[in-house]
Length: 184
Image 1 (tube, one colour):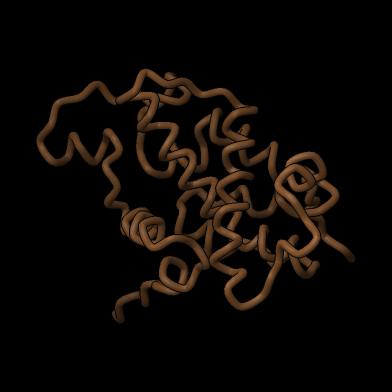
Image 2 (cartoon, one colour; image 1 turned 135 degrees about the vertical axis):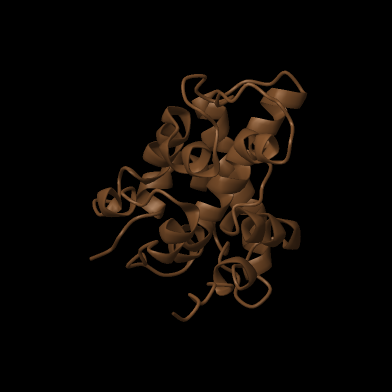
């Protein structure tokens, strides 16, 4: 039986910072240090998700099925009608492989392409800040942080095309649903 080809392009061809490319690579290989992975390496930690406090923490739960994570996904994508079809995937690799294209151009397309990476990254950062810096999960702050992260990352794409032309972070923040929309 042939080995399944690993979708390396998901990690390495995304227009995101290099450290996040490495994070996504580790996420896709299921190697990031969630509590279940730490316990598998010999540590003895009580396995409960730091974001929701009600389920065991593992990669699939933390990023795609945790009630707190789902609130973030919903808040940033609920205005796109076909998002119900993507939220059925329960692991990051399948999720990214099936991330739909947005029928739009310019800023909306650029934002949409990096949105799942930004959500994964910010959720991981919030999780670690909650553990190590006594932080907390606040939906509106996480939503704003995802949008600000995307805005920063757009400069990586902008080396070849200025997708920010005529836009500001404030416009993106206030008009998210109108700017990041399917134009059928």
